[in-house]
Length: 103
Image (cartoon, rainbow, N blue to C red; front, side, top):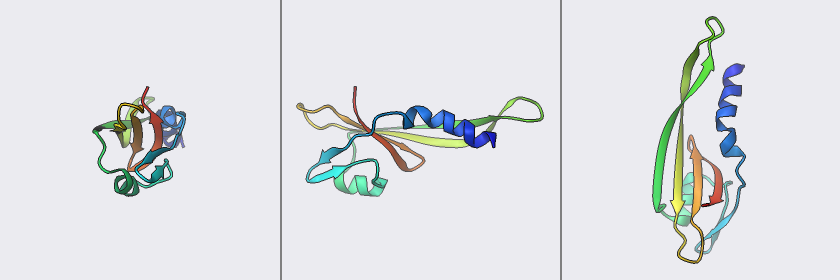
């Protein structure tokens, strides 16, 4: 029971970001898309960053934190030209979690 709660707490900052939509050519894209659909509509991102984070939980018997698994977080940035801020797509374990304007 503790493992799902801890995993949720680790991913909470990503879920709290404001989800937006943006235009890729003639398409409007949002976080409802799958990653292959995003690539099909928008093409390859300008930059990609991949990070693997450990999922840890407290061991009931010893009270120590132990690794329970890993999660992969990808950050894709699409440059939309000089008149618009770049869009940042956050993908966690192969699913789009948020689409935001770069700050």
